[in-house]
Amino acid sequence: MKKFVTLITFLIIASSLFAQRGRVSSALNHKESDELDKAYETIMEALDPENSRASNTIEWPRTWHVKGQILQDIHRKGVKNIVDEPLFKAHDAFKRAVELDDRGRMERQLQVDFTFLQTNLSNYAVMAFENSRFDVALECFERFMEISNMDIMKPSEEEVIDTAIIYNAGLAAYRGNNFEKALEYFKRSAELDYNGVVSYQLVYEIYKEQGDSIAALETIQEGFQNYPDEEQIITLLINYYIQSDNQKEAFEYLDIAIAQNPENASYYTAKGSTLERLGRIEEAIEAYEGSIKVDSTFFTPYYNLGVIYYNRGVTSMNDASQLPPSETEKYDAKMEEGIDYLKEALPYFEKAYELDSTELAVLETLRVIYYRLQKMDKYEEMNEKVQSISN
Image 1: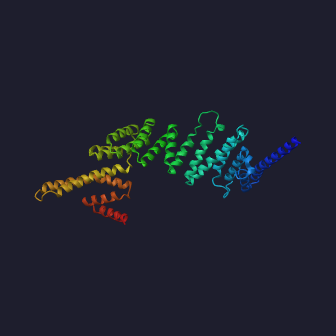
Image 2: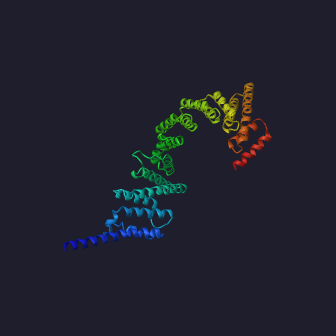
Image 3: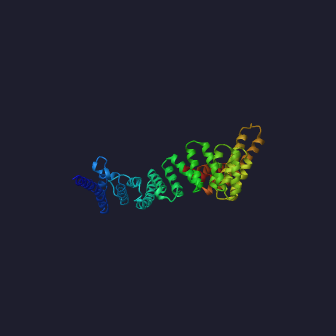
């Protein structure tokens, strides 16, 4: 009789267990029939901690596996109003299945699901990025990397490194103003020599934005050590030292830049501007002329040279106006000197105007020069252009 009672008890327990696990099968059947709302509702009943009959299915890895598959289908088929971010929740469900699958019976199935999940995450990241949902894109990339380094997904204890994903995670974080994460991923990307120059540049920009000039300088110096021939890195160093008023260092890197790329006119112009700020005008003129020799279509050196000669002309004329009326000869000499400087300035401003006919500073200066040189037709022409732009 006791054996009979035990058998009945066992049958009741087994029947209850099969009934509970049958709910998981039912959820899977709803999924296969594209009834994803019913599938999700059913699987969640099997995982309801308030439901005493779900005690076995909550700890059954297959339940979580099916939940992950249902959620993945909800995402893939774009079904709305069932659950938010189903792809991320699918990842969580599959991870729970791995935790509960202590004998590894579902390992191969889960490996396949995780592989498909990574593809979905990658595609979703691109879509989120294009729609400026940078936090979502970042989470996609981070979950992608997490999957790659799960024990069941990698052949050895060594970390699996996907440099493109690391860099893209940094980019998503940067665009989403998550600078802490952006620094983490861009530094790693630079360390791995993936888009290293851009990675250093972006780390530099973040530190500058945060007001950490020491870290910014250290970053770009490290970038220069690793990429000494890269124009972007050298340019950042030059600009940093110019903005910091450290002319000695600026000149050092300008000379390096010119030696490495003598065909880059902007380096000569930057050197000219730096020399001009130091009052070394003749050297500045030489640098600007060097820039023009390299690139005769570069606006800035023409404009800067014109300004140098124009200012000299204005200074001479102002000096003349300060002389007493009795010193006629000195007055005439100073005025003539001023006119000569304006004549020197004129071709540079005319070339600047030829390159950019909308720059108001050029138009206004040409108007003054034409008036002083009594080129009245040109003066009227320039005056009309100034008026049209000003209005």
